[in-house]
Length: 211
Length: 210
Image (tube, rainbow over all chains, first blue to last red; front, side, top):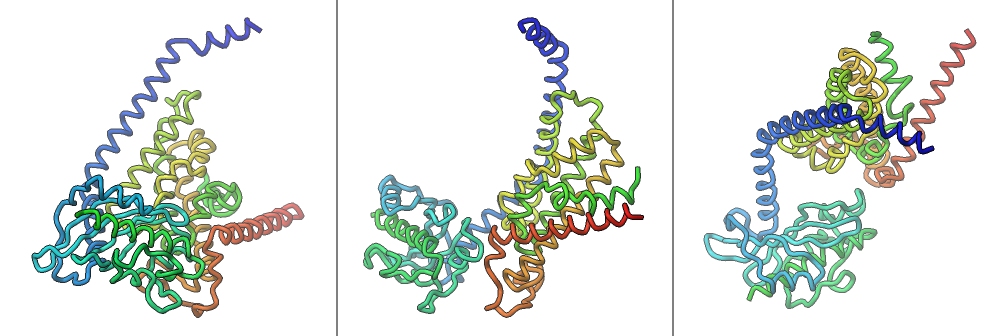
């Protein structure tokens, strides 16, 4: 038994062989890494541009008057009070951009995320200067295709209003938004609707905490 | 090298999905619209061909003991390249395929062909193996996409035709949304594999009785 182990060790530990293994693997990794660097150099620009454009589009989708609206170039600084307000409402606060309507401060575009039925739903919530919601749009989600995606696609609820559109005009004065009392859910997609509702609550709370 | 035989193997007798039963995860997950299936199929075809060629080219210098590690490094390299290129130039596709592009790294078809074919065969044969196996994979994906999209959403060519909504074949109230869910994927795939096995065993019996 002990003999066997020794012979095995001898083969495995042959330094020349180990060096060959290491060097081959190392060289391959270096070549692959170099190749990736090249590709990344080509694609980094377009990818950043696309992400920027996506954020821009999401922001335009949530304001009342997209034609006359501009946004602050960089997000505002999130204070601890805002982050805490959002998390006590059940969501996670992302970037907040200032909205300017015809050059005047006209509210905020707030990125928040909240959990849906299959994962985190990342959304953009527009809030005007008076603290009322101007629009909700989903940026990223992993809801069930054909069920939760109805919510993301803003399909009408039983009352006939788009599930995302129903938030327009609501503000912190309406109290905490809750599915079933002041928010209608899409049949079969209650959990996804609840996720969006949590996000809107968090966004309103964060804007309220701005002071 | 026998191109005709390799082609037949990739598409039918040794089809990666229906006969080797490899790459199930992606097959099940993304075959909900025609565009997804085509994009995924072509991505896998490109990566499979490239990694097959490279692995066949360096197969003599790959030490046997670390061959799996070498395969994965080569495959992961190509997958990341393709992922970045898709993100940059076909953003719509990267949005709908999401995490399944990076997951091609562990798609068993690619590792399986590296181990079973390109590690033992020449560059040219491996190149064609990659293309034919890739076509076999894409063909199954497309068939599944067409069936699931038709029965599940009632449309054809979703993601490309008719401004991305697909051409409506069934009126909206008929489709069974269930088929676009994972459970529908299992059902459709099971039917396809059963049909394939039936056809294969039938043609085998015929050959034997000759």
